[in-house]
Image (cartoon, rainbow, N blue to C red):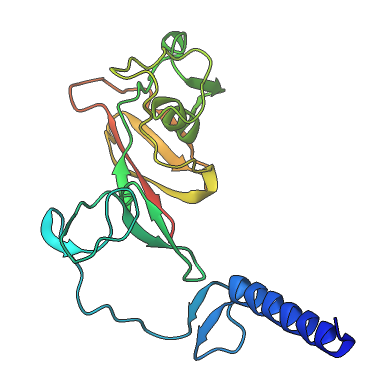
Length: 215
């Protein structure tokens, strides 16, 4: 083979290979010269037509991910689209609520009630770690001394993700002020309170506690 043709073929092969690699690793930027993802839009994004759940003949992608010859496939919604703090799109099973009430929790009013509760006492101050109790009740982590969660499906979990104490702000939205005094909650979710010496426990002696997800 003529050396000139040999080198020409090598050059063509090398160019084609580099081009293929470039296409494989290519990132497209809109209003940015430094895209960080396969498609990076530095600005607003509009999608003019979105199919609705169970809409027939709405998309051209089959259930197995392959292409259909026509837009004759039914759209079956399964996930919601979410974004992180940098605007990178992802998917989640559902949207987390911005706030929720903590499940029922026993709040002792006497030292003799501490046994079997999740509270501790130092002097006349009672304390309960709200986050640890929430994490146990939602199957995120186990807490010693609390009963095991009873499930209809042993592999199911209540929590969609795995939050930490610092992911929430904590609120005591109601408490019986004829019984409880000096009610406070730390940024880590530790509730503390004292009980008034003359307190009489009634049907209204409880607390409402709200967890709010930080933005």
